[in-house]
Length: 491
Image (tube, rainbow, N blue to C red; front, side):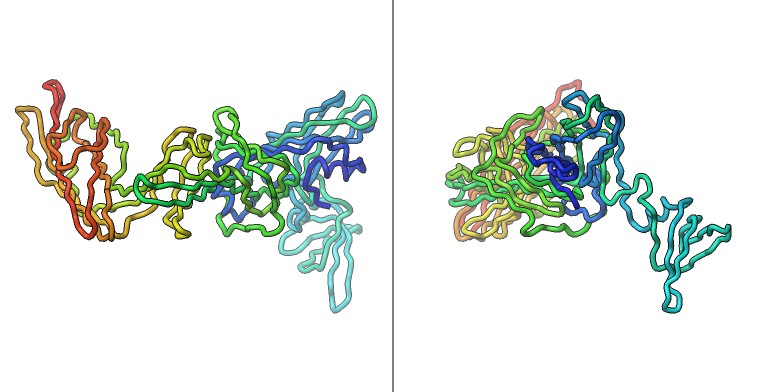
C-alpha cells in the first residue's frame, strides 16, 4: 500500500476509523524555482519549497512504542519535521529513513548478515546459505562449515528481513512515550522540496495606442515532483520564497512529465489574497489534489474586462538613473550609432476594472483576435503599480541613431552633444515611437534644443514621442548641455 494523504494513511495502517483524521491536511506552496522543479528529471533535491501540516492519530500502548509513517516525499527536509503531541504523550526520538530498498543498497547493508542465494546451473537451481562477506561483480559467502564460496553469477538472493534503516518508501519513525494506552492526537508539520508554482496570465487586447483595452485573467501553474501525491489538501499558494540557509541543490535537467487525468481540480471562484509576512498568500477554494509528476492549472485571478492600457513602440528603456562619478569628456563616449531596435510594448496600471490586487510573478501571454503578440514575465506587482511588458521587436519599424555633433569647452566647464534619430515606418498607418535617451556624461544637464519636446524626464534621462507617418520617416534631433562646478575633477 502506498499512502497519499498522511493522516488518512495512518488511520488505515492502524485500523482506525477514517473519522480519526478530523482535519484536512494543509499544504502551502511557495513561488520561486518553478522552472527548475518542472524541468528536473533526476531525484528531487531542495529546489522548490512547500510546507505540509496535518493531524495524526496513533493507537498507543502504555509506555514506550515505535510508530512509523510512510508515503512521504523523497525531498522531505528531515530537520524541519515537527511532531507535537496534543495530549500527554511525549516524543522521545525521531528518525527519517530514506534509503530505498534497491538491490545494491540491500546487498551493501546485508554484508555480515546471513543470506540465501540461488544459482541456475545447467538447468537446475542450487541454493547456498551463508554470511555475506562481499558484494561486487559477484557474491562471497562464508558457509556454515567455514568454507568461503564465491558466486560470480546468481539468480536471486533472500534476506530474513530488511536491514535497519532500509525501507520501500521514505518513512518517518518516532519513539513515543504514553502514560496510558489509547488514541493519541499529534500535529505533524514538515518542509519539502519538489513543489513550486508561478502565475500564468492571459491578456486579450483590442484597440491601438491609448485606446487600448484589455481583458486579463490569471491562473496558477503548480508543479509537484516531490516523490509523493498530496490528496485532498487545503492548498495555499504564497507569492514569495523565504530565505533558506543553504543553496538549493539543482537536480539534473530533463523533460517534464505533465499528467493527464490524475491531476484534476474544480473550483467555483478564484482565491482572495491575504498578507503573509512579507508576501501574499492565496487560499485555493475547496480541497486540491496534486499528483506526483504533474503540472496543473488552478484559478488565481477572475477575468477582468475593459482594463485601460497603452500600446506603444519604444527605443531604449526608461528609468536610467546611473550617474558618473565625474564628467566624462571623452568625445567617443556614448557615440555608438547604427540601427536601434524598436520594441512593441504594453503598459497598464494594476488598479480598477477588477484589478487592484497583488499580482504574483509569472508569465503573461498577450493576444489580439486570437493571434499571439508575445510573452513577457512580470515580477510580484503591488496594487496600483504600473506593469510594462515588452512583446518583441516591431517588424515594420526601424531606427538609426547618429551623433551629429560634440563640443567641449574646458575653460567654461561645459560640453554639448547633439544626437539625431531617424525612424522609418513601413506600416499602413501612422505610429508613435517613444525614444528613451540616457544623459550619461554628467549629473547636471539641460536640453538646449529639441525638434520634438521631451515627453518625460528624470535625473539622468529624457523621453521623446516621435510621430512617424505611414510609409514614411521622421527625425528627432536634440542637443544637451552639461555643466560642472570649479571644484569638480575631470578627466
